[in-house]
Image 1 (cartoon, rainbow, N blue to C red):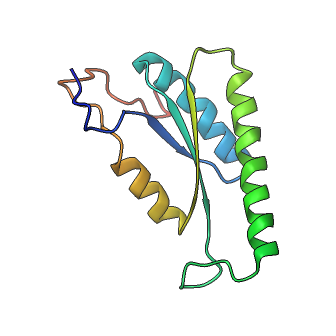
Image 2 (cartoon, rainbow, N blue to C red; image 1 turned 30 degrees about the vertical axis):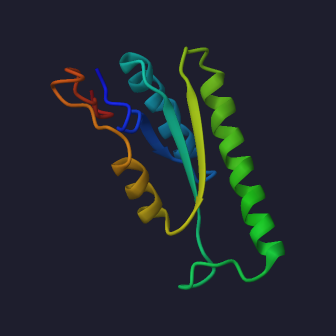
Image 3 (cartoon, rainbow, N blue to C red; image 1 turned 90 degrees about the horizontal axis):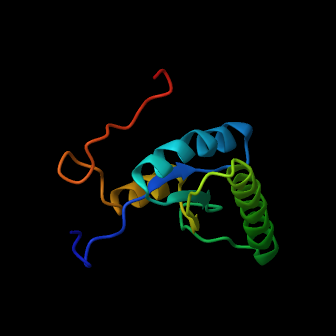
Length: 124
């Protein structure tokens, strides 16, 4: 049994509004369903500069709107599969690689003890 202090496991997919991001989300559906864990769609809003802040509130609003549109498109694509998958959404501000790394490291990774199925690659 999982400790209540541990974060819930999830299959994490970076979404950026591209077809590749949506394809990654669609590929990940089977992984999430086979493990009976959520599919977490993550969109990272890049900061304007190294300070990490959006200096113009209009630019920040546009960036957030772009994130919502990209995430909605991915959610609609996943829902169109009619697979019984729980979808979680995260929109975070930060450098994409850092946001994805932090999100991935915050979820419990499947191990032989809690999930004997290896993650399949696209070639499988």
